[in-house]
Length: 172
Image (tube, rainbow, N blue to C red; front, side, top):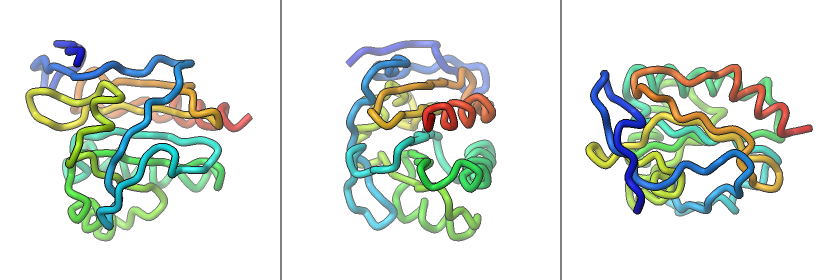
């Protein structure tokens, strides 16, 4: 598995990512993750026209909490043909509990803790921490990647406007 050192940092300290980030224009890699009821799902299970796939280290940390709430708030404006998935290494039970406490009900949280399938397939698995790096991918109807942002500093937020614009453009 390819390793990339120093592509992302945590509080300025370089980390190693495993896997390859899919390129814009490439077919989105398949993955297997767990839903909040511990059922396995993959990319093919999501039939919406456009997917916004967000990876975060843990929904129960300040920046990830803020980011997931922001995407939850933005989901309504994107319409029913767009689905936002938030993938982390959190246990499904913890994700479900966090969503209920945070009032997050318009994004789908998914757990990569069992296989790290998403993290490896999308090049966002942090070797040193076994967490996911912060990234956003937009997938169109053909499941091609139309937008990809790997956030260089784990404690920073993504470019929401660019991701949301890419989701809207993928609908056209």
